[in-house]
Image (cartoon, rainbow, N blue to C red; front, side, top):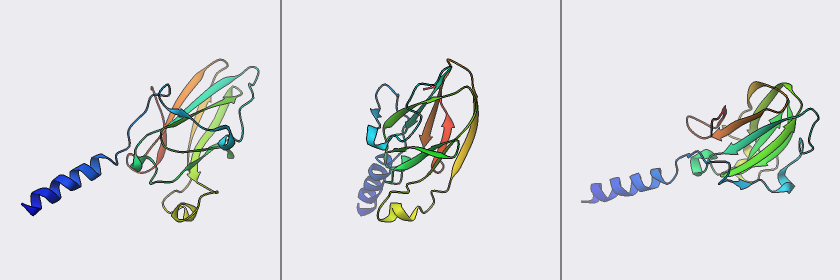
Length: 143
């Protein structure tokens, strides 16, 4: 009987901690205090929409730092969305540990820099998601 109860409790605990994609229209906007760059419309311009999955494993409980072309653009928590204005061309989009974190988050254990590149055209909107599936990562998204 104890084994069954332990299995049920473990299943409930694990299922509550998964990383789940969230639609940008349902996500909370990153507060302006945590947006650092790329907020002024560029002419000609393009837009990057970055959404962070909801769920504990989407973050390990820590805020992620978003980088655009190697510069800090935002600090994102789970279930949030941010929009960034960029010029057309090739851009590096990355995530890193929170340089303003406290406690274990300040140690940035397991939160090494991860980057991808994208080529974006004038007027284009590209979507990305920060996910906790198979480690914290940033990937293109159709959501």
